[in-house]
Image (cartoon, rainbow, N blue to C red):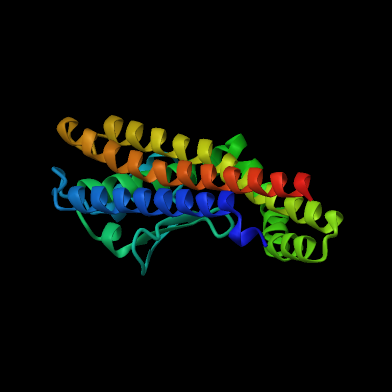
Length: 226
């Protein structure tokens, strides 16, 4: 059983360390800059609304959602969702996150190529992610290499999604900082704080992509040994 493989145990240790490390970093960074009031006094919802309106996206609705750092933009409903800690809070952290999500809405409006690629592979990712674990497990248990490779192929789509997500998120953060500075929604001395929050968030996506790639390489190694 691959669960007792030393390489698998090492992979799990790396996965846990990266996951806990990056999550702890984003949480601590967000808390730090959540305590720093935004000089303009505008809450996250106003920041996002100003950026969206300046880009001609008055039709994008902004809603409040529960959860911690549950902020996201839905390209299907054209709805931008901000968490409690961002929606009504006039902090440096809230401004950075709100501007980042507004950046995703602008990407969608402009047809940003990597965003279109990520959206296009979602059906394959949903199917592959659901079946991959079962196929890989069955392939190993019953010794059918075809099932194992089919599961690996399904998992590869999930890895591709994680990798494609990186440029999408980095571009949204770049747009966020540019919009905050150009619009004057954040003072020059607070731009660094917003950048720290967005950099910490980006590291979580980098870690997720790295973990996915490492898992894929491990599964390929198992298939070759089989």
